[in-house]
Image 1 (cartoon, rainbow, N blue to C red):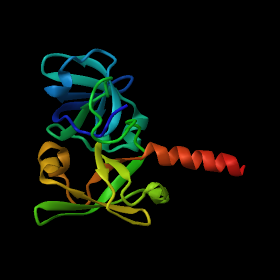
Image 2: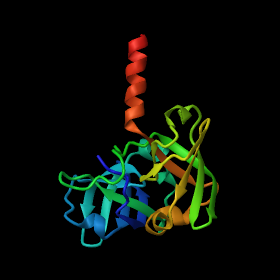
Image 3: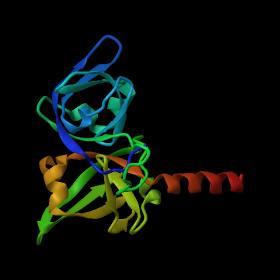
Length: 198
């Protein structure tokens, strides 16, 4: 479980295909604090398991299915990735409850500065707009954000300058893909409502 509050941006050292899985190696600092084998770390909002680490890097195995469903497949050496360690008891919850299970990839349609802030509009996969609620929560590349506009499968959010500085959004532009995780509560409500109708 995560909060969507990015702790740092790591840098991809390598992403190569191994015999049994893809191997993702990331240079990090904060994410390495108190790290242990088997820990969960959200990488661009995708929950991955630590398989190796040393003083300067952390490694993960990535399944082909994960590459297919997320924007991890677009990562190249030097790319910035958003990192968040799993929520710990006694920690702060500044965002919302995030599982790290990506629902799909969105495509940025508009990303521009408007005054001191930035406006970001993303098209979600067809049909997933049903999970979007004005003033509800959305996770974009692991960043907990508040939905400001909804139109069909398209959402918009406002980004403060600090978020641009501390996340990989500074490298994004129109046409970039982003990982989306919709609010868990909405998905449970839909499931329960459908079961009730059956």
